[in-house]
Image (tube, rainbow, N blue to C red):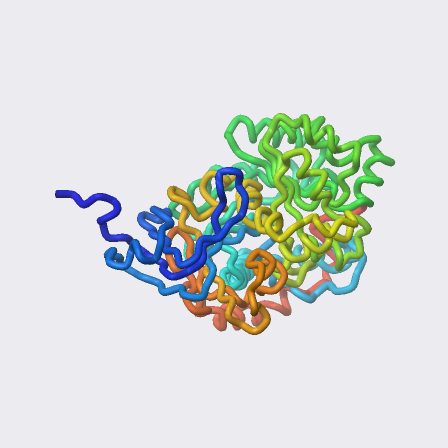
Length: 454
């Protein structure tokens, strides 16, 4: 006789924790002394600890005193750029690109990308990030790292129009080649860099390819107010209006940053026929002294999901999505002048379901519920900085830190247990990357991969 699912041995049972859950209105709640049963890489059930006391399982985790959250999603980053963390400091955007980052990136090799991605994945796993959206070069190397380390990723091969037609072709070839790789943990996207580096013809062609092949688009647009103002002065349209007239907004598109989205852009975004999402990385905007931030409230009113992101560590110095969550809440209170917006529960909604939707995985990730992928993190709130707990949501958003993540799980596989990384050898990566630094950082050649003029 075949045992019923409730009787069949589980792959993993997590017991004794408090679980963040969503109700049928997507409101955040918490179930105490709960258990999560995982089979076949998905959550089978969320129940009480007592209900699974005698249930057989290949592995059990006692998570007493910990909170189980859906794994965090870094909705926009350039993972290999951790190799450039701290290289270009205290510079305006134009100098940051033209004088340092784009000259250095002209030296990039596939090995540099691989090692940078490996170090970035280690950092993200330790910070409770289970999935990241990456937009960079030599992305087959990043895909290989993702497959090996066990993370989930949404990957796109970036291109500029200055590369000619081959740049766009490589972006498509990568997306088709790697779609569904790593046992389905890799999804792919077309990745034109931005409206100021990719011309209208290439954007139009990209939109056509996206529709033809059922691919989304991941693009920087209206990154800051200067870009919007410059686009209006030179072309008479905003970057968002460029996305509209080239058909990008008729595809499923993830817009990175959007701090330069103007009031005139809001009806354009509202009327988009594709699924539009925006990724916000507030730490970098503060560091570059940009005068505006992602208009989260206005986008919320349009029903557009805003996912949390870090951008690359070359500009942000960190891949800490936990920090992005706290900063998003604080900056929204400041910019709107309303302490009631964003609430801690709203911030947790951005960190969970909205971030999953931003990368097109809203039906699979973002909540701990039956049928969802078992991407779960366990957070220890016993430290003095998180005690006492009067409001658990506020403690998670404003008191907890990424270092409080004890365990990180993707598809039911434990990637970090009690702060020990199980799939990446960090000292070896750091050693190899250090040996490559002199060649990578050399700017004596005078080359740039692109010019920033906006």
